[in-house]
Image 1 (cartoon, rainbow, N blue to C red):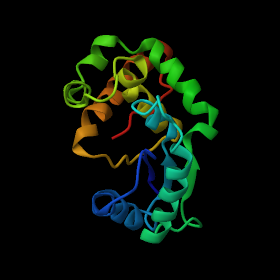
Image 2 (image 1 turned 135 degrees about the vertical axis):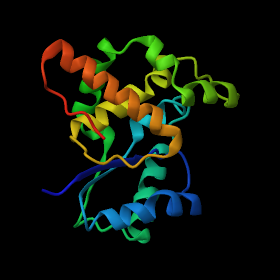
Image 3 (image 1 turned 120 degrees about the horizontal axis):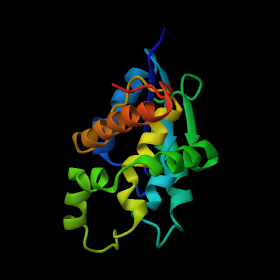
Image 4 (image 1 turned 180 degrees about the vertical axis):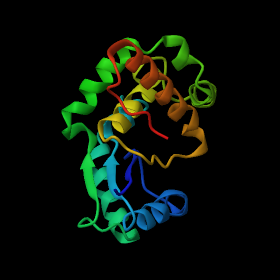
Length: 178
C-alpha cells in the first residue's frame, strides 16, 4: 500500500527559491512514490493575515501555477483549497474542544512568533490554535507522511499527543501520524 502525504502552503505572498529547494523539490519527488495531497492552506493564511485578505485569492492562483512550473503534475496528485473542504473546520472545532490551552501555549513556534512578529496582532485564538488546524488537516487525510520544516516539528508532536488523548476518551478512532 502506498504511503499518503499531506502538505500545504499558505498563500501569503510570492514563492521564492527557498520554497523550491525547501518544499517543492521534495513534493515533486514524492508524487511518483506516494498518494500526495497538496493543499492551498488559506485557513492557515488567515491566522496571521486576517486583517487584509484581499491578496489571498490572487496569491493562491499564482502559487498553484508555481507548483506546476516546478514539476507538480495535477494528474498525479490531489491539489485542493483547504476552505473548500468543510471537514477541515469541523474537525478543527472538535479537536479544539479537547486541546488544553497550556499545550498550545508551550509550542516553541508560537512563543517565537509572538516575540518576532511585531506588525500584526497575533493575540487571538486563530493564531494560538494554528497547530489544531494543522492537526485537523493531517488527521482528515490519514496522512502517513507529513513533510514539515523544523519549526513545525512541535506541531506534529502535539498532533500525536492530541490523537492519544482523543483515542483515550473515545476509543481507537484517529490514526497517530509519524
